[in-house]
Image (cartoon, rainbow, N blue to C red; front, side):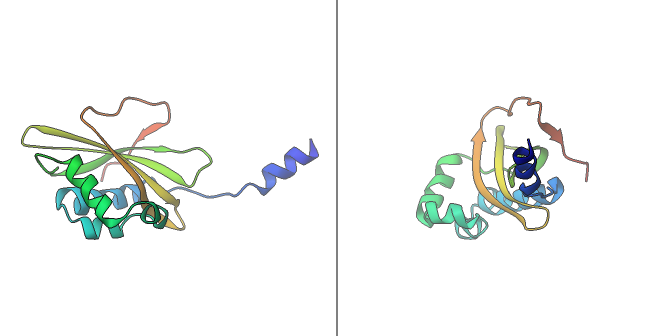
Length: 139
């Protein structure tokens, strides 16, 4: 039992700031998706993502995600903490020309270190409920 207590005592402690993560996610989707600026959007990705995905791959992905219209405007509405991880999901949605845009952006970081985009996904339907999802405070 003492060993188990010792392990939990060594666990790294950190805090999340959902509002800061949401602001950074909104900046990313505005630049990369709404303005279709692949180069500036790529610069907003976490270093780990940029090591895995080239600028050209990123630009091709943006084209595949938005073949007809670009999302305008987009707002973050919900977040979900990844328990024990330095990452948080941010859920955003928007519409343009009758097309619905729903995104789940995985932001890596903490309240102290700040947040960068680790991963992004698009769905034609809103992301379903989850026990860990929370509404972002009104701004």
